[in-house]
Length: 240
Length: 240
Image (cartoon, rainbow over all chains, first blue to last red; front, side, top):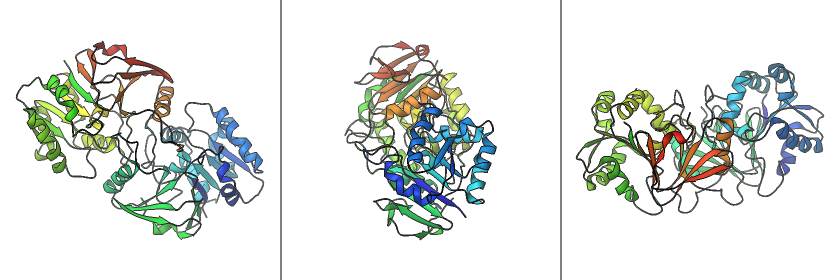
C-alpha cells in the first residue's frame, strides 16, 4: 500500500523552493490535514533549523503542518508516529549515514511500505527512496555503513537529470555515468528524471508527473521514454 | 621515499590521451628503461585489453614498457615485482572495489611508500592515491568495502576541477560539493586540480605541474592558490 512522491529536484528553473510541486504534493497528501515529519539530514552547509525554516512555510501555505525530526528526543518513535514523511535534498551520503546513525532506515521503509504512510522526497530524498544510493550525483563526502537505502521505489532513480557536459571539459557526461552503472549492473534498469518532474508511486503503479517525459534506461545507450501522466506498472522496470 | 605523479585528467582540452603529460611522466620515470605495471580496473564500459591498447603506445613512445595487471595470474606478486605502477582513470568506485577484490590495496601502498616504486595515476587513479575516495566526482555505481584508499598523498585531491554548473540547472556546483566536504570534515583541507595539471610528490615535498595554479581549499569558501612549479611542504596541507 505504498504511496510516494519522488521528485527530481526542489526547484525547476528559476522558480522558488518546491513552487513547481504544489499539485504533486496535494496529489500525495490529498488535501487532508496532517502532520508531516520532516527529515533534514541531507543538509550539510546549513543547519537543520534553517532547512526546516525553508520548507515549513511551503507546506503551511498548502495546508499541511510540518515538524523536523531534530526536535524529537527519540527519532525512532517520531517515525513510528508520523502521519507523513518528507526527506529533503542535499548530500545523499550525509543523509544516508545520518539515517543509519539514527537507526531509522528500516522503520521508515516499514512505515511507508506496510503502514501506507505517504512519503515524499526530493533530490537526495528521492535517491534514498530507491534500493541503493548507487545512482546519486552527489560527492561521497562521508561513508555510510552501506549503500542500501529505503527501497520504496523497487528500482534506481537518477534525479537532476541533465544531458551532456560542459564544453571543453573531460569529465564524464551524465549519460556516460549512467552507462557505467548499467554496464556494471547488467540486470538492472533505471529511470532518469529531469528537474521539475517526479515519480508518483501508488501501490504497484507508477506515474511520471511534470511537463517532461522520463527516460527509461534499459541498458547502455538503450533509452526509451516514459510518457508523463500515463500510469504504468512498476514491475515493467527491472530493479535491484 | 614516495615518488608519485597524481594527474587531474588523461586529457587536456582537445589533446590526445596523456599527450599533455609527456614531461610530467618523464619527470617521474626519469627516462630510465623500466616495466610499468598498469592497473585498468577503473574501466567499466570498455575492456581491460582495450584500456591497455590505449595506454601502452603512449608510454612506448616515451620509451617505457607497460603491461596490464589482468595478464598476470597473481595480481599480488605482479605488484610486488613492479618497477613502476600506473592506475588509469574511469570510475573510482569500480576501481577501488576491484583493488580490494584483488587484495592489492595495502601492497600497492607499501611498494610506493616504503620501497619507493614510482606511482602515477590520473583521474580515478589520483582519487585512489589519496587517504579516501571522498572527493571523487564519480557516480557510486558499486559499493567498495571501504572508502579508504592508497594514502600516497596525505590529503584529499579533487581532480577534473571545474568551476560553476550548467546555466538553469539546480544541481550543486563543484565548489558547493567541496564546501560540503570541508564542512562535514572540518579538520581536513584539500587540493583541487584543473584538467592538465598534476600534483608531483617527492618525499615530503609537493609541486604542482602544468600551466595553471592549483586551488588549496582550506575550509568552506576559504580558497588559496598554490603556484605551479613551486615546491611546497606536503604537511602544509591538512590531511585525513
